[in-house]
Length: 456
Image (cartoon, rainbow, N blue to C red; front, side, top):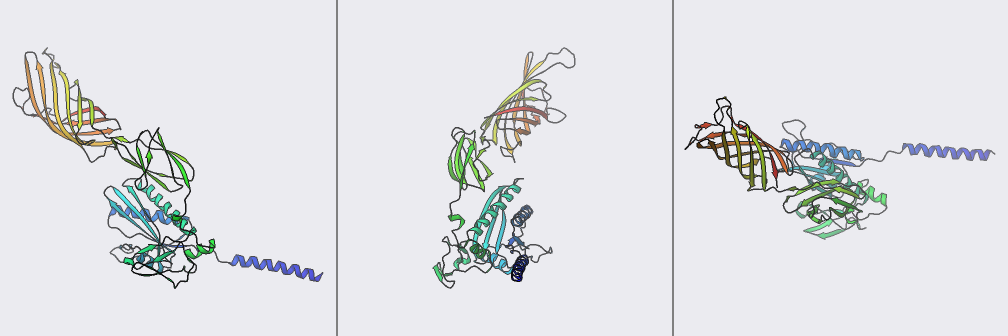
């Protein structure tokens, strides 16, 4: 009896001791990431760099990484970021001094109307590159979505690397880093691999590093993520542009739109970059975020390259009339010759029973849209040219030549048509058999025209 009680008491004590020891175990240490974005002088690039740093930090912390503070450098402004770019061995060395597991460097580059975002990651313990992601974005509000997409792609690559660690080796070739494509071989650390200008030492993972933790978790080191076959999903692209060629990724032809659609297989997750091309239309590019299920994606229609236009319009100070014109675009959608005719009557407004006169205003102008591409809703243009007003009165005919000094106009622009508003200062030359004296046609400033444009 006493022996049984002692046995039960021993079991209870052992269980309590085990529970207390389990509770005392330290929590697993978070993977330490050093995130570095060098300072930039351009105000625009600096703003984008700040957005990029915030999004990348937030995404890393959300996924359980510990983000180390960025080292500061001397400058006129206290606490400013280091301005020199760090890549490859320099980034690994700096991250190693901070006792980080992974070094991540980012950069922002502006090329014309495009913004180039780049993120590179390195394994600090082995000194190898984990990934190198570069994405192109436009200078518009969509930059926020592009940075967010870049952050998610970064997390995906990090997760793939953690699940499938591979061999990363340092090389003396140009001081750069080379990622060996072969999986890790079980060999002693002191063994060397011949390559390049000298032997390359295979560095074992440091105790407690991300690479070491990954190996302990899986029991063995598997192939890198890039070597494994990624699951694919079917994506159906829907388009009204029959015969349009579809390119994905970095200019890879995926197929042609037929019967309003194109079905392609692409890796699940990530971003699908689609470029559409068709003869006679402006090329267009769209990005879509994919899930892990088949999906139908409607593509926006391409915009036709405009070569001709027909316009109807009405002009102030020429009340009893109406006009029509024709445009020929020498440079499609931009530079044009315009010919138009405005016919109107001038009635007797003083009540003197004087006869009404008929007038025909014909002009030729050369003009162009400025600063605005064909797909903008509001476009601005400017033109200049010459015209003649033919006035027919009972028993006599007059011809007034004039110079249209600066014809300024705004378009409310749609794909196949537009509404325009024009300011037209006309200067009479006073030559030959004319009615008007030399000077502007009206004393209150330019004439104003409102009209409608059909494009094809």
